[in-house]
Amino acid sequence: MNERFLLELNRVSYTFTQFKRGALIEEIEEGIRRLDKFLSLQDGILRHASTPSSSARGKDRRKYTNLTVFWKHADRIFRLMHSAWRCNCVPLHCVYIPVHQTTTIGPRICLELLLKYSKDNKAVQSCPWRPIPLSIDHFELLASAAGTTPAKLKRAIRFDQAHAGASATGGVDDALVTTSAGNTVQLRCTAMTFPEASPGTSDSSLGVVHTVPTAPDQGLCHLAVKSQSAVLGSHIHTLSDNVTNDAYRLFTATTAINDGLIYSLADILKGKCTLNLYHGPRLSIAHAIAVSFLQFYTTPWLNESEMTTSICVPVSADGKRLLHEQAFVSSHFHHDPDPDDRVFALFGILLLELCYNKPLEDHHLFKTRPESKTDSLVRSAVATEWAKDVEYQWGEEGARAIGWCLHNASTRKEGWRMKFATNVVEPLRILCDQAGLKQSGSSPACI
Amino acid sequence: MSGIEVAGLVLGGFPLLISALEYLVKLRKFRREYQKDLNRLRDIQLVYRESMRTLLAPLQYDGTLDTTQIELLLNDPSSQGWNDLDVQDEVSRRLGNFKDSYFHGLQEMRHTILNLAKVSKVDEARFQASLHTSKVRSICTVPSYYALTH
Image: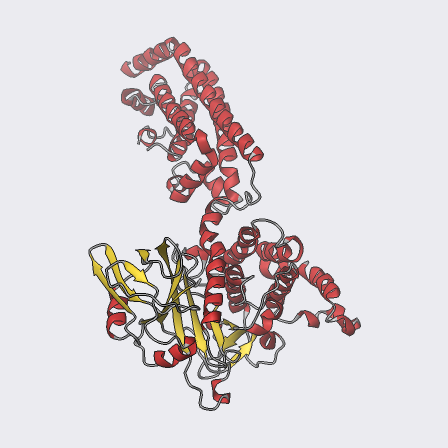
């Protein structure tokens, strides 16, 4: 009885609140209309204020910001190193840059490389120095003017006790003494600078850097000889152009490259190597190369016209495996880049070759016209034909990445780096994720 | 709680109200009063879901969410995705200068839904208990009001 009474009571009371309920429901409807109005206004603003790079927005943009500015530092490092060689043997010297850079995480700018006297040290009699793995860190100087003007150290980008200790005790010269007091990094430095050695005075006051060479400047080759005995992690040199506030410190590092038997990517794809790169490693290399392209294209580090021959993969010590995770770009100090839109087509073809694990020349369309194998127009046409089937191998994402390289890319378009990141690097990263491949530290996924 | 996560709470509020009303509609005595509200709320739920889809759709183009994740968010208001920092960041970026007004509007809607639940007796324990003990059986379950308020 009580239950029935309660239900009846509620029904009556519910009926009495009809107007209130109606008002509340209308309020909700009005609320949704208001939210939609905000959305449409904002979308209208976005449409009118669209920037050239507005397609690459949000998360992707943040992820790749660091990678898209890296090339400026890479370019500067190349030119500083190039001018720092004072030897006649500079055409012999080469650099191996791992495509899987392990330290490009977050805002820190750091380049890892292996400095070699020559590509094949054994071929050079009395080779003066062994390969030196280096880690090059960027830091900023607050300089009122270049040259001998004292420059205050704004903040050492990287500082840790290990390096401080190493540089103070195990460095090859006593150019740098680093101490730490609380959160303040203090630096007393008599730095060797290139290219001009100008006279000046050495100021030992903390936090002030005078660019005064303390010894005759004999260049990087001389430094490389001295660095042979350097302790791991030692600061061995600082590169600065005395014009900008950017400076780069060279630290000895551990090598991520097996400097033994190596095969170029071209040789592997052509089957000149008995070892195979399987689907996963090819995908991983494709992604790593795309990241490297973003980091190094338009700098002299990357020889854009010979990518497949300059990208090399070491073989394991037992000779049974290609160490794809140690793939590197081989570079010299005498390359002058010539940025050209064709490079994207070449990159697209490289991705295609990695996708199908064979060179473009092996495509059946070339069988009837072998003389056209070097014709860039015919190659592009064959690549376009070949790209139609990429989806069956690398899915939609792979097709998107390759299609963009072959058809849409242009260095003339503003913000092409970000577009390359979002249209090529990101799809390849997704592919790697889907394939369950472990990404290297340079992967934007880790940033 | 003042960001996009409130959108998930609002989205979760509709099924609670609708389920409760569906249950009550099964009772013949209440049919007339509740049916009208039920129909309006179903429509509103649909419109709100589409509004949320419009809000989230651009996030699939910058890689924050894919279409499956968006559907998951729309279908599961309790999904942790609503609390995801990347989603929150991107929605804030998407809304630009309207961010604060939009989130304020969402908060107001949440309060309105709470009021509606109160007025509709969805949150009244005695009433709920009487419904459960009544002989009417329903295919619908009355969801917990707790989920809406917390």
